[in-house]
Image (cartoon, rainbow, N blue to C red):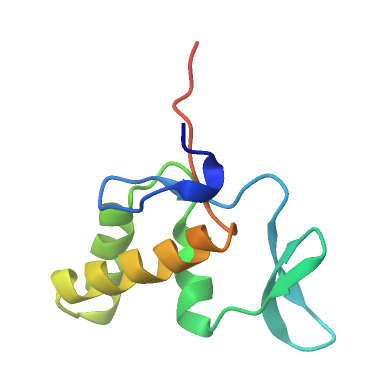
Length: 103
């Protein structure tokens, strides 16, 4: 059974930061960082924008749609880049898949 660190990001994924990680703006250094226990990651501006859209409700496809519209760029190229970036973060344990809400 795959744990949260072993997600495979696809267009249908609904990525979200795990409970132990927070995306915060570091006022001292004037950069966005992902804070996790004993680890800090400073993503670039594009990664921050993508991560801010990853709320566990939007799919990766929805994120690509939004960015393609915002930047008037080809959706397929954006989708490929977003999946690669999110997969890298998932492989490092900085991203997980949103779980279906059960009532």
